[in-house]
Amino acid sequence: MQKRTREEMAARVARDIPDGSYVNLGIGLPTLVANFLPTDREIVLHSENGILGMGPAPVRGAEDYDLTNASKKPVTALAGAAFFHQADSFAMMRGGHLDICVLGAFQVSEKGDLANWHTGAPDAIPAVGGAMDLAIGAKKTFVMMEHLTKDGQSKLVALCSYPLTGRSCVARVYTDLAVVDIDAEGFSVIEVIPELDFAELVRLSGVALRDARPA
Amino acid sequence: MINKIAPSIESAVADIRDGSTVLVGGFGNAGMPFALIDALIAQGAKDLVIVSNNAGNADHGLAALLKTGRVRKVVCSFPRQVDSWVFDSLYHAGKIELELVPQGNLAERMRAAGAGIGAFFCPTGVGTELAGDRETREINGRMYVLEYPIRGDVALIKAHRADRWGNLVYRKTARNFGPIMAMAAATTIVEVDEVVELGALDPENIVTPGIYVQRVVPMTA
Image (cartoon, rainbow over all chains, first blue to last red; front, side, top):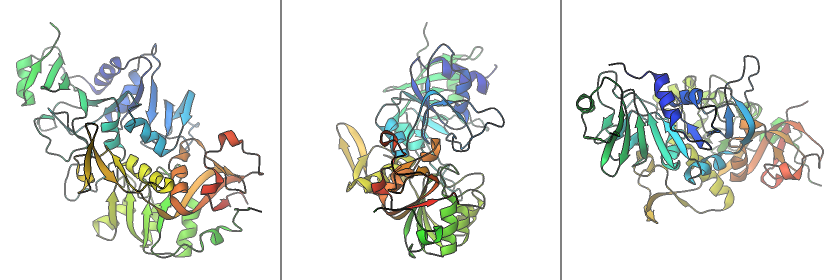
């Protein structure tokens, strides 16, 4: 079985982003999606520090530290870009104007609960940034994550054990093993990687999965 | 005649009192009012509550202020960063209080203060530990948490250009919290790259109208 690489996961997410969408790509893994957006679609990237129409990193020497992304790295602004302040930026999320956000996660529950901001470790300094606003704000919240933790625990769970970022907010999860929708009945698998059969995916996931793959 | 241009940076921050709540602009270093923070450090006010998106980077700016031990509490969304060692060590030593606020709530709570809103119901953080024990309410089938305004005694922000009435324009993503903090503080002090003649800023493009601004400190000599 060949798990999807990070790049393959990013390309798979990118395929599902329609032409004309306004999209926020969370920090970490989701950032990769930008490299795979189909060039024949016009997709407007939102960065929560105040850009619509964010472009790629500048060429070396052209960095402008007044033009950075949510990871505080220099970026560019495309033709048609707009800058705005923080209240506007988060109004775009909460107000339901943003079509899609793609976030990383520690865990996603069968009710669509998301845990991605804090491990809850007593010594860890908590930091949340825009994660909670994004999770509940976009019209659709996609999660992109490895299916299993490094020690083989499923990140799809019945109930999140990590502190929640948002309740019932995740619509779809893209992992290195499968693509899984979340609806009123729980997890519905719509795609499994080649050479992995459904029963084995269920065994690895340790949660109830419905087979909703097209025949 | 209105002239908000401060005679000096020292005079601009001279009346910041011990115990003040100070709103500090910036998202990381973009929009961080480094000169005003240095002036506040030199001024010596202590027992401060700082409201800012982050809790300082490396050893300059906000981090340098924290290092003086004059900050009692930080209200922010994202303290932990690769270069936030000053905050991290104060926090682990129990020498600084942290109120963690989702970034959009931080912005909206300050906006509410500036707009005269008493409190508002917000969907962010419902069912999470950051909602604390504040009141929740179901409105039209959706759950919300009650959020209160964050008011500043002082805001220290950075803008690109100003005129003597305090009208401001910013530069790219350095705008971030500037316009919101300017509304939310009793005294808003702005460091600017350049002061231009009254009338030189296009009224169509002014981002922060001067009514929200009390003092302007030009960074050009």
